[in-house]
Amino acid sequence: MLAGQAQKEAWVNEAFARIDGLLHCSVEGERADPPPSPANGEAWVIATGATGAWAGKDAMIAARQADNWLYIEGKDGMRLYDKSTGQERLFATTWVTPVIPMEPTGGSVVDVEARAVLAELILALRVSGVFPRP
Image 1 (spheres, rainbow, N blue to C red):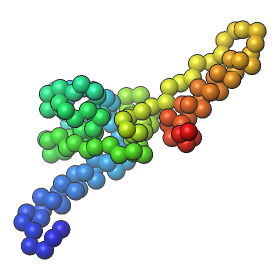
Image 2 (cartoon, helix red, strand yellow):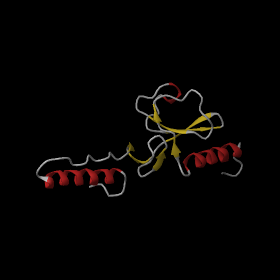
Image 3 (cartoon, rainbow, N blue to C red):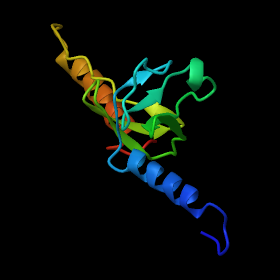
């Protein structure tokens, strides 16, 4: 705050609302339109092609605070927990989640399948932020 700043409480309240929305951030899921009856404290990842009050806010977090939407832009390296999938999501230009690798089945040359699964696993761990990106 600056000395003599008008409506200091508005700036402080906005900062607290953002902290509340981001500290131990979890979202209900991802959707392109606001839910019909959102509860205060709810947060969502805004999907591509957003509509209604969320139009033009793709990939942002919409956090419901004091019966209003607070929009928070993702920053590279940010993480959150998605309640709908039970997964952690990583922001890297957009929100990403690792894809579960396919398990090898059948075949007489297990080495080729095993290598393919290991490559998928490494990619999934990179997407989740466990391994660094190449």
